[in-house]
Image (cartoon, rainbow, N blue to C red; front, top):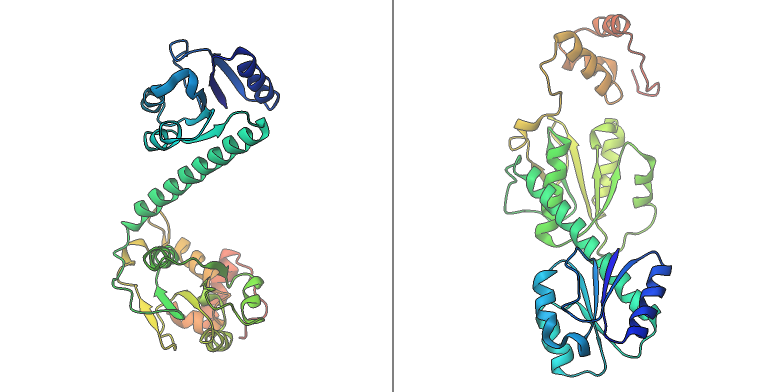
Amino acid sequence: MKVLIIENEIYLAQSISNKLSDLGLECVIAHSLKEAQKDRYDVILASFGTINEGYIELSKQYPNAIIILMIAYINDDTVIKPLKNGVTDYIVKPFIVDELIRKITHYKAYREINEEIKFYRSYFNFIEKELGTPEPFLYNPPFVIKTNSQRGADIYAMKYAREKHIQFSFFSLKEESWKSIFKNPPKKNEIFYITNLEELKKSDRKDFLEAALKCNVIVSIVSTEKIAFPQVIDISQQTSNIVELSGEILSVKDYEKIIITKFESRYPDIELAKKLGMSRKSLWEKRKKYGIIRKNKNVQQ
């Protein structure tokens, strides 16, 4: 970080510079506003007694800098007016440098978090345009989002959270950690977003949904099947343009390989073969032909 120190008391300016330099900050000292070199500064420490109302000029010239006024006393001119005109904060002389460092660290972290939030909001707004999210939101948790795209379900869930001003914890049914949700009674305002319901076998899915009725959960499933649950929001039509297959047109052979590999853990061979419009023997032959080794040995045949 680069720090500009504007202070006409030479000893004080040098003392502050030495202590900040020891922490790895690059410091530049100016004994008046006119002396200040025009450059990019992350932090500006300015003595009010040195610059007076020059803080207005600093705020305009360095709108992204953390500007901290060093003042001798508190009144409207030294605190209220500067804070209304772009100054970030103030510190009263004499002060402990550790307190100054704490302020700098605080505002640096605050601005970094704000920039990160802006980035994620921009990203969300960008991808949300791909989905015409149904509104108004009809349900409160628990409810199931039925879709043909996991990405579409995620966008819907995040927009729901933004509209309702809520936050939730994320879990995937591909991992074992989701089981902790039902072990202890959930907190009143605790909400969970659980993805990949399609990963469970039908018998396990039924038990899961029965347990979900007692919790504040939002569950997503990528499926065309009917879901036995009181509250289901079907956004398949809205996500029809983002079905996640590939960025290129696939050959029939490649398509078969992808579908068999992706869905073999979700369905018994008889049901998977039926959905693919072939016999169980044909499915076995294609596995052998494509060199696909069945990963889930526990799926009932």
